Image 1 (tube, one colour):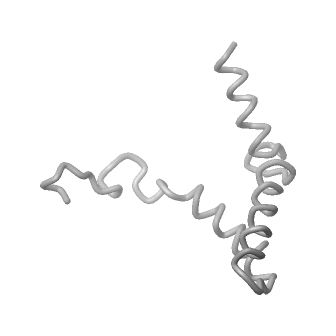
Image 2: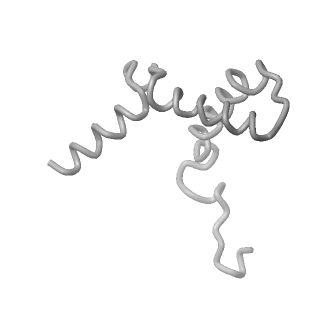
Image 3: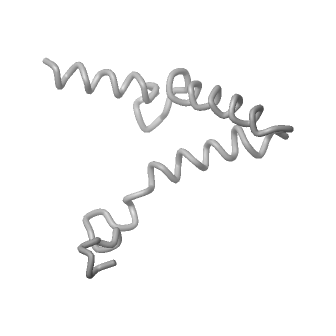
Length: 83
């Protein structure tokens, strides 16, 4: 890998914190939408996970964002960048 010019994530800035946000997301998905339900089919699982992710992003307030949803934070940043 290194011979091909690929940098390992542990060599760069942030190291172990690189994936913390994604890990927190998947922890929430697993504990709030996967482990609590029994999906009979992949179609059912996909539909329910899509519904959960829409809820997670658009309706569920996050303490890390001052009780705002990720969508509210994202759109506020877009508005600031455009101004």
